[in-house]
Each structure stands twice: as C-alpha cells, then as structure tokens.
Amino acid sequence: MAAPSLTGGGFSCLRRFAGQIHSRLCGVSSPSTTRCLIHTSASLDRSKQWERNNLIVYPPQRPEEPRRPAEVHHSRRQIKYSKDKMWYIAKLIRGMTIDQALAQLEFSDKKGAKVVKEVLLEAQEMAVRNHNVEYKSNLYVAESFSAKGKYLKRIRYHGRGMFGIMDKVNCHYFVKLVEGAPPTTETKTGFDQAKEYVQELKNRTITNSL
Amino acid sequence: MSFVSVVNFLRQSLHRAESILFDIAGLERNLVPALAVHGPSVLPRPEHDGSSTPSFLDSIFWMAAPKKRRTIEVNRTRRRDPSKLMKVQTNIEPCLECGHLKQKHTLCGYCYAKVRRETGEIRKVIYAMEGKPLNTPATETVVLYEGEAARDVDQDKRIVERPRKRPSWFNLS
Image 1 (tube, rainbow over the protein chains, first blue to last red):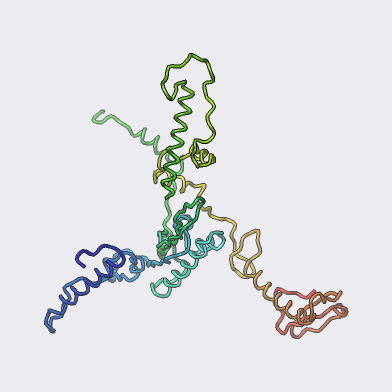
Image 2 (cartoon, helix red, strand yellow):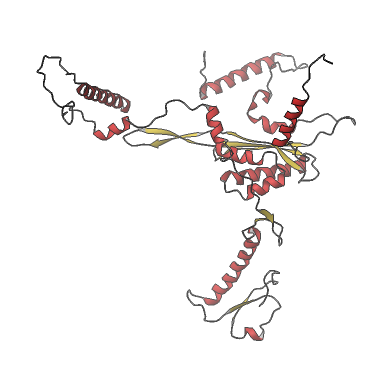
C-alpha cells in the first residue's frame, strides 16, 4: 500500500515492508562481507524492558570499588485486577525486607496480595538460583509498582436503549529485589527540627563586625 | 438515535421553563393590550403540551452534577491519603508448633489443615463402618492407631482403626 494507516492490518504491512527492505539490504552484499545494514534487535521495543534488566552483566569490579549488591527484576503481566487497587499492595511492601513483605501479603484480604506473594517467591527463587544471592532472606523490596495492562472492552446495558462501554481491566506488577538490608531513612522528629531552627537563629551575626 | 431524542427533550423543557418564568414575571406571551386585572401570578398551565416525553425525566434535569473536572493532583491526594493506604499488620507471629506464620487471635492455618486432613481420613473409616446415613451408634468413639490395643476404659466404645502411626498432636485420653 502507498500510505498504510496505523491500524492492526497496517502494522503487519509495515513489518513486511521493513522485512523486504532488510532482505534487500542484506542480500546485496557479497558472501564474504555479510553485514546487516539495518538495526533489527529488540532494543526499540520498551514494553518488555523490565525482564531484560536481568540480562545485563557488569564487568568485574576492582577491589577498591564498593560492593555492588545483587539485584533481580521480576514481573507478572496481564493480572486480572485493577492497577489502582494493585498500587495499594505495591505501596505497602515498598522498602520492606522480603520476609516482612511475605508476612504482610499472606494475611492481607486483597485478591492482588496472593498474586504479589507468588511473584515475590518466584523472584526470591530466581535470585538464589541465577543471581548469586547467598541468603534468601537477605533481600529487600527496592522497587514495587503496578501498571495498566491490555483492557478488553465490553458493553454494559443501561435503560432506555442506552449503553456504556465496560473495561475488563488487567494490570502488570513489577518488583525489584536487592540484596542486603533495606536502607533506613532518618526520621527527623519535630523536636529535632525545632532545635535546628533555634540553632540557625543563634548563628546569625553581622558580617565584618567586631 | 437516542441523542436526538435527548436534544428534543432538552429543547422542550427549556421552552416550558421559559414559559413558566414568563408567567411569573407577569409578561404575556402575546403582547396584546389587556385589562389591568390582578390575577394569579402563575397561570394554570395545561398538563401536557402535546409532547410524548413523560414527566419523570424532568427530575434528571435538576440533579447534582460536577461543575469542574477533578484534576489529577486532587485525585491523587484523595487516593493516597494515609487513611486509604493499606495498614501494616502487627499481629503476625510464627506458630510455635510448625513455624509457619499465624495471626495472634487465630489458629495456625498449617496446623489446622493437617488436623483437618487426618479428621477426614477418620471420617472415611467411620462412614465405611456405619454403612448407611444416620446409623451412628449411641456410644463414644475412640481412634486407635497402629500397635495400640483397646484399654479397659474403651470396652463399651466404638473403636475406629487407622493404619498409621499416632500423630504427635493426637493424644489418647
């Protein structure tokens, strides 16, 4: 087609078009120097980037560098749950140790808690098996969030011939476990803040005075 | 199709509201010189102006509706307010028997499940012994495991045999 529209059919046409260009560009070169002149890796597709984060391999560290803690990224796609409701569960376990997170999820009444618990256990297993984590309890939840999955559209019938479009919601859940103890955020009490303020007032002086 | 009927209904109800307001204001539809008669400010209106829309739809016209779109900042502050977040539970502790986690005021789920499984097996044996429903004898029942014999106390009781070692949590008498 001359001007393919960006519909579902148009997209497959584009892909076939790109494939023809690819084969033409690659086929022209001589057999000795078979070099692809087109970039065909999956790096332009960011939709499955979270899982690909596990594949990066760092070069060996020098002895003077601080130890880089082991990380594992895991996710589950197209969970039959709402992304807004899943966000509350993700927010609960952010920053917790993995044991504490699993305990909280086990006794939560939410539907998504069961799914998140499975994801955490899978991630823990992956960390120990593939990512060189020594102790399975020595992990904490560094990042945890939910995202919108692909929705199905259905018709919801109202009175007087009216209708609404109902979305059958799905969500994705992403988690990143890091080895080590969770970082502690220093909580400043009101008294400490007041003390600092008074100290700042006392430190005021007139410059270039006696 | 229904959009057109809604527009028509809106137009008719606007006309009706306008004519009611006109009556209240004292103006006449047709500005014809009339006698200075002091009459009721609201003239009696005919019931239906020949339209087919029923009157229950009038109530919809005066219902509450949002004036402005709620911004995402306002929505976020409402949804992420601490009272709406999930609370961290502090009543979780490990079970002393099996080591699984349990809530303080509840039985351990693992221990309950294992007792339930064994009870199911005992009930199967009892069902086989009774044969038909509502055939329970009017005596006590005692469960004996492998290597155990009936004691003097168990003479009048119904004995249920289970072909396995006695569980540690099921004590006799």
